[in-house]
Image 1 (cartoon, rainbow, N blue to C red):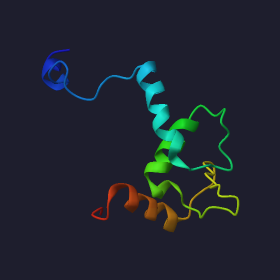
Image 2 (tube, one colour):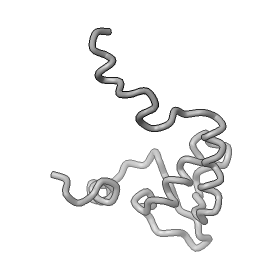
Image 3 (cartoon, rainbow, N blue to C red):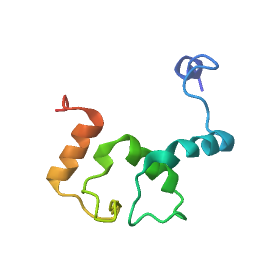
Length: 97
């Protein structure tokens, strides 16, 4: 493709490429988070990612913890406009239009 060299950037620039060994190494980061979901089974393919993002960002935890200390993730539940707007502001900042 003509001109593609200009849009790719320099060799070695940008984020490192994905690899299975790097992904396995990051699973240890999510383990000590203390965040436990009531409706995200350990067998779910995105379990580690959900734990990692939930521990690092409170905007993913829309609801308060239940009495047993777990949070409801509820990925298929429709959000109210209020909760959706709050999550956007928490994720991307309050300077959005």
